[in-house]
Image 1 (cartoon, helix red, strand yellow):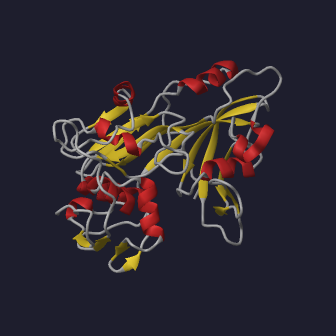
Image 2 (image 1 turned 45 degrees about the horizontal axis):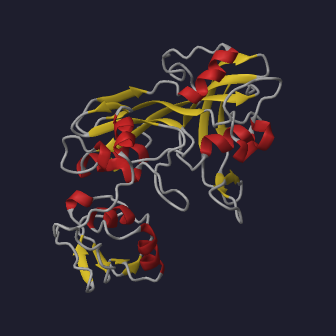
Image 3 (image 1 turned 90 degrees about the horizontal axis):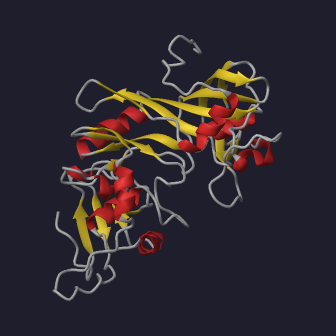
Length: 339
């Protein structure tokens, strides 16, 4: 594909290498000088189009589609040596090295990262620091930066899968969409779910009129959402170590579902207010205690990916205080039949 000059309207054909890429990431890859804010303005005013139609930042692209690229802002001036100026990295080398140390699994097609709590998966309003902007640090020996194929909430830690090629991205994305990917989460809840094992089937939808991303149970307008849960251990009625298996992947699904049954995830003030925190002298970090513990899914070239992320530092005090066992366990859902 030829890059745009930025001085005239161009029509660019999406290549096979960009199969299933989001439109905003496609622009970031091919037009790195274009900022997120500038792209949003072009999309909002209809200057960027896909196959002649208006598009959103999250529009998925297919090979052969035509992207209308309008005249773009000038690139930064060259440096003193006459070379094109490079955009300032979105991270420091120390941050890059810290991220590389969090790689749990890597081969020619896949990376599984232990995403730290507090790091947003993608950029957005008030999110200048995000994983998507740091993916160049995880290129290693590949020709291209890896691609996101799913996401975790900013405050959720644990297993996050990246694809190292377009072909791998297509197969991994298909596995998530078909529910062939098995994601097991660990959480500490305030209170103990009753019964100790169950299936939560409550539709969720974005709350109207709220600031920021907030979801709620909505029987009329919500989308289908199912979560399986099982109590692994509990401390009387005060708290529980709960394993969660989301069968659907809705935004904030686990947080909404656990709050809906009266046992919110510890530290989740967004969905339970002060009810998400423990009193009585229990001293644990006031962070979300939700961790993507394990991912099991088909490998793009055959076989199975099975990766486990260690309990994060901010959750260890709760496990220690309540005496929960943080050692690796077998699949807590293997012998359960929820239908």
